Image (cartoon, rainbow, N blue to C red; front, side, top):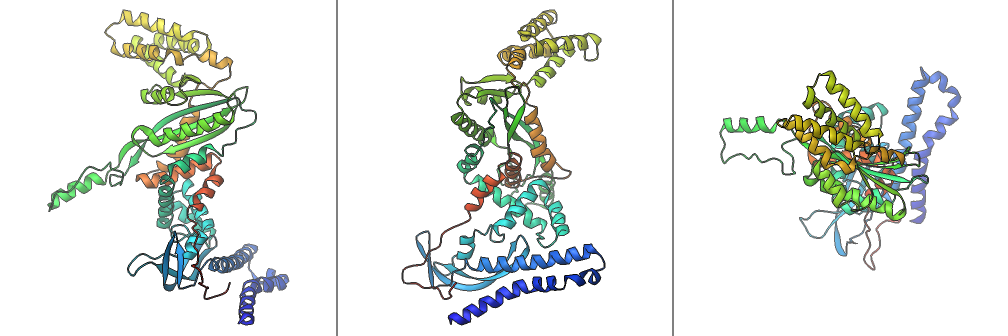
Length: 481
């Protein structure tokens, strides 16, 4: 039996490598066999892909178990059947016969081969899932499908790519602590970094009203009429908008040059709870590694952002800076309210005090004095009153000249850019609407990629799909590996 098994194994190996040997032995005739070198290239690739598929299929089959009973998670499972199934590997579709087990008749089966090899979502080998996840983070499923068709061999459908992205996003969010760990513990702080800034921002995103996340409050009445059905359909077919959120953590050298950025993107969520938790965890990890690093907190004037920055993010530590460009916009609106939006006086005063605000120590006090004087002249001007309140309330966050002497950042432009690169470029293309889980799968992967943490993230994510299967005592496999 041992000899027979050895011969069978050798025959399999020969079937894998024989086509390559044959090609190489006849390579001097290939120039005349193909009409162009491109055609020869395609033939070589097809040959190599078939070899890869054969090797992956043979290797994956070694993770199969063929015994009457196995143990999983402390429970015994009994063999139900052996059945062939198709899987997608990086080289394309492979088919493998494997054993399925269950505890009792009628219950869902487990597949030891899938669990031990870490097959992802019952269909993808880990390497193929990684490629699919990376592509869907950059392209729509439709574009991804077309790209794979052009590359050849690995050709998942757009629906398969969409499901993969959604399912991986759900797995990530099922363990928030692990997701936070990816963004905090493995962070390598640049050696020359002396300052770290944290900032967050929001961007409106079109959602499906049929999302599972509770935004849909419309319900059909019992036994609806056709008119009621149509009214409901018209409403649910229209997108509606909620605020997605982005954050950026940036490292700077002693001259204020940005060295590295960690980006976060989250789908709409009440209070931005998950995003804030990730910022807290990441900043805490950075400070624990380098306690002397300067901390700068940057945001626009939104009260919720500053409640988080001041009260939750290392309270009492670091420097708070209101984004200079938002402050500049408010200054422009203040003088427009006082002198008229198109007036030369408004433009001149805005340019003067904008420069003072940015470049002069104590410039914020001169701005406030100017606006207070104008408000006394125009006490009924509510817009001017509002803008004066804005600068008074944020006075301690507008010491831009002082920040510049320390080479601190004074703008949240990197975070606004993160909103564009994470969200707008991928999730706000023409006609797109999103469910929470589907969008989050894309945003998590894009955040990892753009933060140069994709390798770390994928290592942890793929490990969640691998499970140990053991054999009960005195049980021997039917086939020898």
